Length: 127
Length: 174
Image (cartoon, rainbow over all chains, first blue to last red; front, side, top):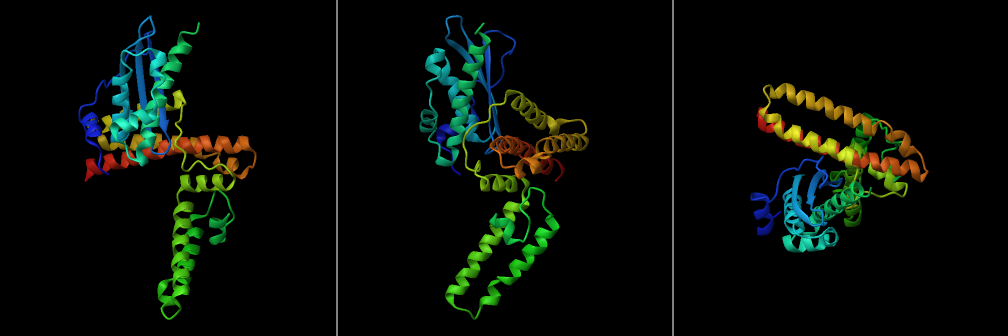
């Protein structure tokens, strides 16, 4: 299958690959997986005291579309508040990366990863 | 359940693969195109359709995950085309670590031993998620079927690990 140039760019030059210290209280982690293809995605955000995402990192084991989706999302969430970041939709991701219908689940994975990270942050800071 | 009936088997997650194969070969012979050489176009077409169905049924029943998904869908829980994500942090963390270990496997001091060790880990996980499937899939209550669905989803990640491992093996030892 032919990947779009945007996907290829993210696969060849992935942004923000890596991990933060998960014990850092300002760090939250979202872990999601896609049973359909066995892809696993970890997305971490570093949140300032005012609730703004200062930095994001990801690690994805999966196809090019899954890597590109998570790489793109780490770029998008930086500078956003948690509420703004939770508004990112998989359709925005798949449109930006021109994903074919069979790869839509990769963008769903990335949307759910950011949502899971935000939920993790909120549960960490609920007390 | 039609696929099981085709091969004269009792619908169950636990099946006799040798028997499945024997019955498959018998059926396949019965509908072989050669036997329909002098028949009408309609009969030829039906034979071709039957062959396709038999092949689909075989592929489904032979593969443990596909077999489990088929039984589950026949019971009204169809997870075959679902796009929803799995969100079980402990399970996914383990998967992440296994994928990391897999990526480092080619640079192990003794790759052959490392492959074997990894195969053992996969076997343990395979057993963990498939051992209760026969029982869960024979039940009809939604709770058992949902638990079966969860196990099948996790089993798919285990099979993915296995695919990745054999891909690495191919590059290492060929």
